[in-house]
Length: 241
Ligand code: XBP
Ligand code: MG
Image (cartoon, rainbow, N blue to C red):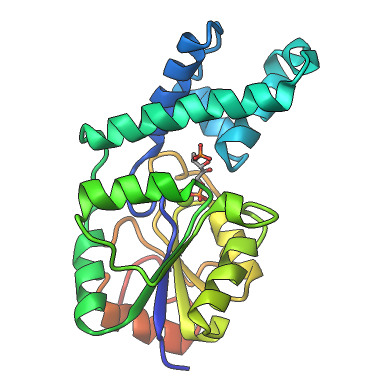
């Protein structure tokens, strides 16, 4: 089957965003008068729970279970997360996040060849738009499906199933690009072949089931290489041949 579309994850794949997310969470905790602090090692563990609101709840469950007993805890989580989202957007606007190497080149290549592109992410569409405005200055994507637009976040396949529907393409005509085990599980759950490029926070994840695992999209990951791997349907190994 011809490769017709690339579906990109955002956090960790288009850009190393998680340090900006982590700083925004910590700043939101300070602003809300909470003495919570998410270190790099704690955040590495918490990242296995996808979605910021879900991550806050998981942290509270583990470390401050009494906080979960407060009245209106769902509203508290939503408010804390809204504060975090505003802080994250401001950081992206201030230039805290750049695209990972090779991302812009691959997007430009697909754009020039009229290969379709889409986004399947856990984060909000507002966060994606901030990143695209700040780092690409354009939106070359046919569609963006965000975590809150579907019933279940990654590792559930929902965002990918929704993207396939919006593109009106079969799974076998697409290739997903992901950085995490949850993202890989989501894409594979929708039947989509998946290239993994691990990010700073996901290097120790299990990527069994990936079409290939590459350290970066630069210098070798051109569309023709991906089309060849996709057509072969089997992993070429850790690096392009
Ligand atoms: C990324 C996430 C997100 C971000 C924060 O997962 O899990 O939760 O860390 O986003 P993936 P929000 O890259 O697999 O989509 O706080 O906006 O939810
Ligand atoms: Mg990711």
